[in-house]
Amino acid sequence: MIHQVASQKVYPIDNINSPYFDNLALKTKVTLGRCPICGNVTLFKWALSNYRETGKCYFCRDTNRKRQVGSIFLYSVYKSTGVKFSSVKTLAQKVSLLDQFTDFTIYNTETYGSIHEYLRDYPGYISSEYLDKSYQSGETINGVCHQDLTNTSFDDDSVNVLISSDCFEHIPDPYRAFEEVYRILKPGGRHVFTVPFYQDQYFDETRAYIDENGQLQHLLSPIYHSDPLRKEGILVYVIFSLEMLLKLRKIGYEVSMYNLRNPWFGILGNNALVFETIKPMEI
Ligand SMILES: [Zn+2]
Image (tube, rainbow, N blue to C red; front, side, top):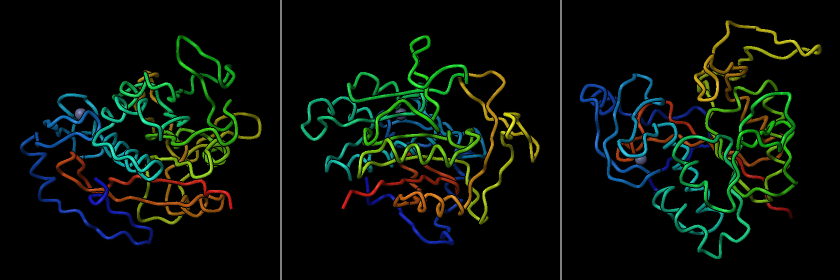
């Protein structure tokens, strides 16, 4: 799978996308391919011009964005262990049986979707949600572990691979959370994530923040993303940009940005960006 991933570490990003197939996919509504999450040869259902949030897999129901995260997650696991898996489902089935995965912790910052469903029985799997500020990180409420990503309950150097899919834009102080992830990752550990990202801007767009009195302040009109846990949706505090790459480097990470395109894996559109940060090995 890795040769199908384009890794680019420089700006500007080449436009490697051909819109022809993408337009055709929207017209025909379905494309054939193989899902990197459930592993099935499947049909992807294209219903929105925002390709990132469409393309549901007939079998596992996950969308383009989740397949982007899933692909780089598999790549990260391969780089960490030397073991290649063709899908997240295959990984979940075999991971407990392999020596390379003794004490290998995978942390997902969401508790829904197929990646979570496949991995939930793996003993080295952790998942969490941010439920409410009244809870302490590590508390379990109705079977869901609450974690504030700016102050988690996990030990230093305890996680091998952390996955988050459009999560950090909802954190009022996202760089505090990136620092916290740095703390809990093992040396050599990786954080694979997507966030809304302006490919053509230098500075993050801070849309809202929490002031010194704990009050929510809006700088721009509020944007809410749909959220399985909250009917009203979830507020976007920040839309990231190139500034994010520099800030992550300053925290200490090695930073990669992947611009993906793979119609066979149901990955279309010109915004298929996945980020991977690595906490360097100790010298
Ligand atoms: Zn699938």
